[in-house]
Image (tube, rainbow, N blue to C red; front, side, top):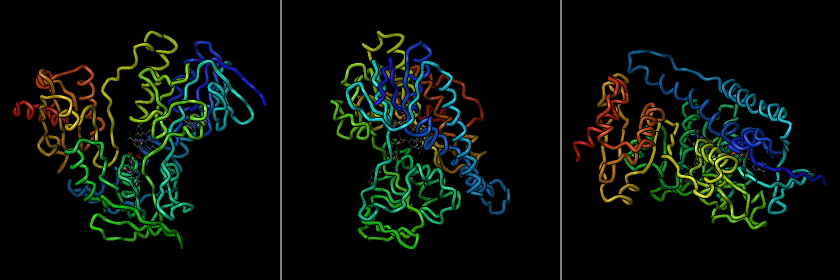
Length: 460
Ligand SMILES: Cc1cc2nc3c(=O)[nH]c(=O)nc-3n(C[C@H](O)[C@H](O)[C@H](O)COP(=O)(O)OP(=O)(O)OC[C@H]3O[C@@H](n4cnc5c(N)ncnc54)[C@H](O)[C@@H]3O)c2cc1C
Ligand SMILES: NC(=O)c1ccc[n+]([C@@H]2O[C@H](COP(=O)([O-])OP(=O)(O)OC[C@H]3O[C@@H](n4cnc5c(N)ncnc54)[C@H](O)[C@@H]3O)[C@@H](O)[C@H]2O)c1
């Protein structure tokens, strides 16, 4: 068995990349271990391919609505095989460019394979034992395995397979109502597949209730969504899934579909890493417990990204990685202080889109005695009329004596972009007065933000 000792070991090449090259460029001996393609979930089976596939779905949705603008378009067709091939090739090219880039760094050793801990500071990958002075565990999550009776052994899809599926599914049942369900289900639904959604509770439960309601109302106009259902059983024969679901009414319905997409959350890969056996503290769901400086309970071992739990976004994992690098290798006093996050935003790239930052109304009301809400609807602003939208909403939440902006939520066209005005305002701790004393471009869609501010003022 070969052994190797390095200064710095990183497990996972997703946001682990925030440590790998920067640490090597400081002259440390560095090792990176990756079991899959370089670039992690976001590049290979997450953010990037999903958005490259959702964009054509958005085009299909625009075409569907073309008649609103007196444009007649004949029914569009989509070459699914070419679309998915193009997306996969583009991603593989990016991912394959990382290895040669790493190979040029003399003090960086690269190990391809699944590693597991065999000591607190030692892992085994293939037939090599690697130990390190400093270890960064950035190994992410995998899709949750559904436990519905009969599903085991059937060719159900998770996001990883769904994003590479070149064939055109005739019909699909989507299990789940979170981010992946509404994004990938929308993609399939708009590109030729008959999609039904089976949701345990409601769509996007973490989103502010008013925003969620607009989303749910619109989404349910497009697709059959079965809320508060309970899966009973799955069987697969004659190339069809037979999924029995108990609906809210108590009725048990069988859905017969060519495809079944399971989108019921993700779980950390801490079991595969054998962490508990070596004294690493995990929470009840298996995520690594870290303090506010991302230190695990084992000295000189840090963890960040999806493997430490919510929020699980690439932008937060990257932010954490940059903070960890800076605080461990540069401004070390920060390790004693811990991270203070700026406002954390998120977007749902479905239809309608959602952009959100800060507290929901429920969270704000639980935290502050004084809460002021302002809302405005897209159709009531000039650009809303030009776009002929019949839905869309901005909701602003101000709190405290000075009415600081503590939450902002948007559902509707361009929500993932529009929310950035409010991310910046929140980052600068802007209050109602500042948002009111701002000139918003006329007649940009951002005027709907101005209208929500005016509504808050009228509610004072
Ligand atoms: C379908 C989908 C769409 C998404 N869309 C968005 C989006 O639009 N915006 C957004 O912000 N986030 C999105 N996310 C979430 C985002 O992808 C994750 O939050 C982010 O990738 C987490 O980064 P990470 O570095 O923590 O983990 P990962 O990117 O998962 O990296 C972990 C790496 O560790 C490797 N690894 C694991 N175990 C081992 C082992 N034992 N040995 C060696 N290597 C190992 C894995 O192969 C992987 O490459 C999406 C996720 C999915 C699934
Ligand atoms: N746009 C984005 O930023 C984006 C997009 C996709 C994924 N993501 C990230 O990836 C993570 C995983 O996404 P996800 O959609 O799988 O998870 P999620 O946590 O968003 O949603 C999981 C859904 O599955 C349901 N569920 C859970 N267990 C179930 C069970 N046993 N039976 C039936 N339903 C069940 C939940 O009620 C929920 O509706 C998200 O938390 C998010 O952080 C982000």
